[in-house]
Length: 435
Image (cartoon, rainbow, N blue to C red; front, side, top):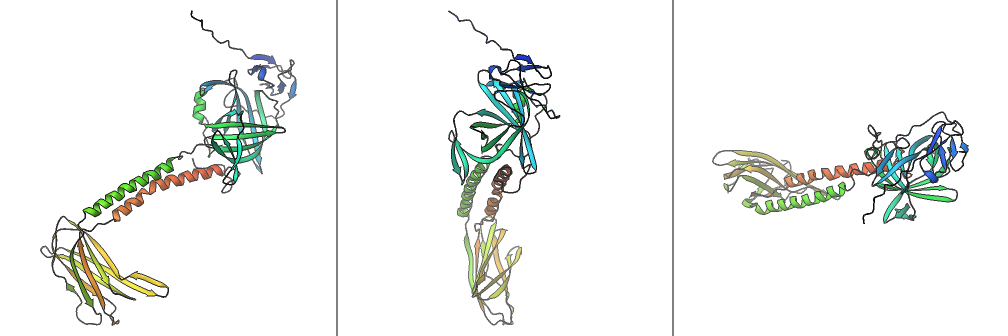
């Protein structure tokens, strides 16, 4: 036997007239509605009274139009809701004040939800039936809820400045609540306190574009400004990933460096010891015996080891190809001083000549020292062919640092902008931040 499908009956809104101006007033929250605001004169009416008793008349001239019109239907997640109420709340901090919008959403099967909007930042909010557990985080107040820790962001007193639509609680312009906010991006826990009651709610940051799509609103959502308390960081998780990538790339770089070190011949082709006395009037320049550089075109390292002590010396070198006459000219200064405060410089030095073709070579050497000093200098010359060099790898390692440092700095700036708006601002208050 087939059971016929039953289409749920759509309950139409209840419509009455405002006793103040006579305008029709619709109620979409049914028996849940306690107060309703006349859309024409903005008087607050008692929805439980058959005569719609006037509870408060609107005194201000300014009328605020909600960005999402009352009665608009939309689907957030897998549930459909209708906007039935709207209020504007304001916080006064010294000489400054700021306000945000709150939308009351209703579904007869799932109850009430809220949308809040401040400077283009939206949150989808639900009231909690379970209470968070109060705790501490880095010495500051915090709460834990469903395994997640929320850090205290701010404490403030919010005042209702404007209302429109209907509400399942007694509401008046001028109502105040004490509010404490705790954040763990993209969520925010809020505790609203009135005499004898504390209500906890959980908000989830929702992009304006998603809200506009859910309610099929025309145009584009208002742009967001600054960094909101529970706004997800665009760099969240990226800094750790960047540093992990940097580590693996450095391991690969180290492996390549070790391979080049092991594949380099690092062959000694010449070594000898000499004595130089600056007081002698003879020409100090000389050439070494010929030595052979074999293999592929590669570098040559010339090392100088001296017995200098509180003195300096300069060496003019020329590496000359015996067959072609091609030469490589360069010079090196060696100095070493020490006293009671420590030492400066080194009695040893080396230089690498890159890309030297194979062939027979000799080295022309001309040492120099201060002539008035009678001290002689003993020094050893050593020449190696195809030595491993790591300068390129050091440069590559430093360049690899740029992306993770950049991302880390950007992430830190984003978090700094977030907490500048809190009770724990690291610097003076700011109305904006990096995004």
